[in-house]
Image 1 (cartoon, rainbow, N blue to C red):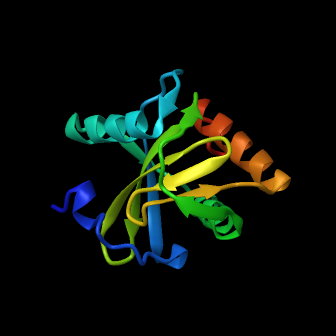
Image 2: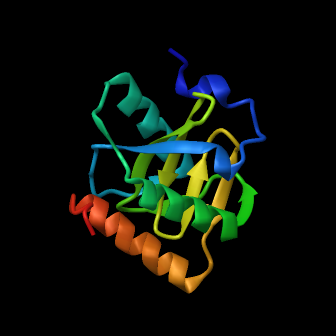
Length: 139
């Protein structure tokens, strides 16, 4: 089995390469910095924390939002509370750590933050995070 960091050196992921997104069943209302969030994902993986697979329409929406977002190099910042910890599975089987915040998505495999500036995309992202936190994924 490939570890989450095994593919971190590859930085040419295309959004259309994303096959699945799995969210860790871990919901604690506390704030995170970039380093703290990645440390938490590593702990979740090491502890075999259960994950659930996102529906394809949500994966497609997240990919569209990332496509339209402005990208920036992964750097240390505060991410706030209620972020989602996730694992991205690519079509070739590689995995990447990611976390989804209210205004940005961070993906380890490409070492990028996707900053969501469009108001409609921010609204969808916030509603999506709330649905996942409330375990109401059928909407």
